Image (cartoon, rainbow, N blue to C red; front, side, top):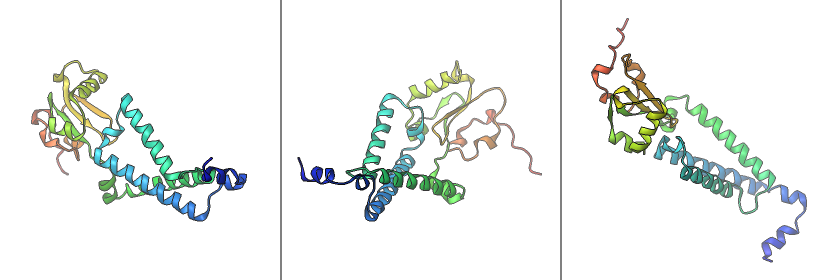
Length: 198
């Protein structure tokens, strides 16, 4: 039996459940590092990671969780290390939530909505930016009850990974597309006149 396993077996119950102050600091720093790495990956890869997951995506998310957990808790996870990692994640979530309320924080953390279709025209560059394939967009149109591309006024890929489908009929208020990447591609005949300024 390896020496480290023998050493671990010789420890009492209290030692198995707890970690030293230095190990606690290592757990906190590892958790912060893995959290920031995951936030950066989501920011770089876009909301595509958060949208409806295929079997492949689900397997990747499970693997991410295993890697993050193993990296944060170390070789011999202890109960107290898990509590420290959990508390650190909750604190980080709270801090990120507060940062998102500021303009700079929202710009750094949040993804922008992106226009995928302007009328019945797919915007290939925007779809590539969001890692959305034409077949995936068609699936989302079917889920929205669209029977023909001519029914579409606009399709927006939201920061959450959801897809908003705006149908033709009523003209689209330009304010709804404020901040949407690619909104300038919208055909003028599908947009309502902006409200007059008081």
